[in-house]
Length: 167
Image (cartoon, rainbow, N blue to C red; front, side, top):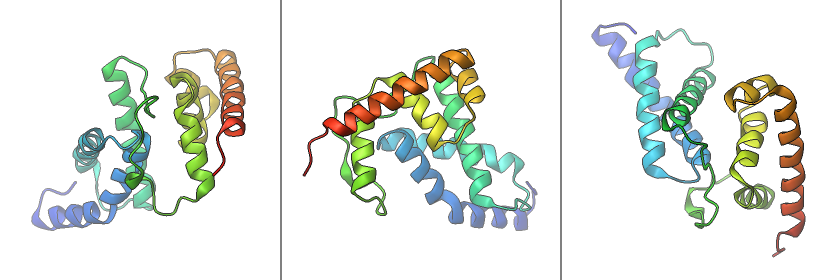
């Protein structure tokens, strides 16, 4: 990042344009844990400030990539499998994105019932769009074991959706 007043103003403007995108990303990945989302958002922008040069082609894609790396680092730092969706506590519906329809709510609710490894493999592969090999590396599993886990997770999600009460 430029270390002059103009560079500082550019970064502040970049921050104002993208902070909601980053915070929203973390809120969804942490099941509404505001404190964790705020902390990770702050870490993301501290990291971004070191490399921001105003030349990023797609600011949102760039900052979400930085955010995803901060989330992965956080999970590794805590040395535990993340519970991205609480399994027993109800999720505060206020934090669900405004543009979600009933189908998204149903999938989110069904995901909450899955075991943590199933949640993680589905989110990393389908939401974060990581290739199976990347998911395997992240989860410290072989590619074959990750493929099997993904198949079981999809089956569990399908079953949870079928068993979900209809309104």
